[in-house]
Image (cartoon, rainbow, N blue to C red; front, side, top):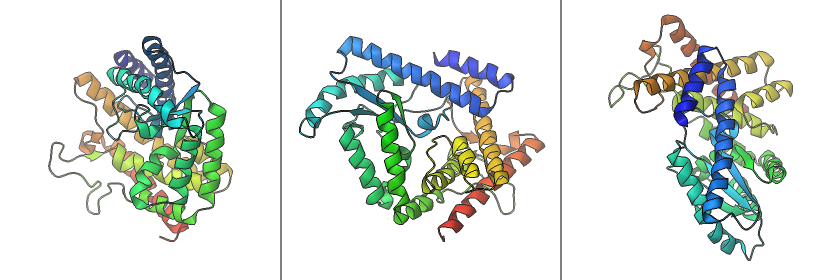
Length: 324
């Protein structure tokens, strides 16, 4: 259950486990949950009439999930072009049931509709390939958010080799598209870390959460997005943020000292987020990502401020590389 998972995360935090160890464990347990639910839904509704591959995107693909997460998934199947629509129609009830059961178990319904039970995310191998090709070769600012979600891709169960082959092709397409890389960089720079000019942090002034900022959207996401830009632009096949940073350093794209600083910032921000969720869980409230820096001790405030400065420095780096 999600309560048992929360207790496990509590124990790991108390024992000093790293954020990376915890989020990888959460992701793998979620993978097992998905695989089990796929089987149970098949027992109740009838299993798919052909092999299928369950895809995950975003934080689940990067194995960077916390307790507060929603579903970003898709279904991949083999079919001839002339039969893809009919196969999809047969698979959608089963895939939708998997999505509903995962939602009931704590993996929240995706408000953006990126789920295997939606027709746009239940595609044949050829349709997925064409969708990725179109995203990269015909980029449009309005479709960049969709591209960002799909570019972190992993197979949970099924044709893992076929999905990896597609990922390698996507990297080749991105390498040959200066326009796409520039648009992706512009997208990554739209959110800036909440560093203030006169105070340590730029905080919300009103609303339901005054004097806070969103640790995920304003701190972690800009870092993850900037690392993705560098990784995809240099053909890095790794999916997780830390693995991408290590590969970028090994390939000489980043200095080792810089990659280490960005990785430590990422891990600390993720750890703060895990601790925040655990505090909210114990208090019986809804899980969220808004943090009040004034509730941190002076040392933790300074560390948080330095993490945000590292995000700012990385954003300046990727902007310079494409001439922005």
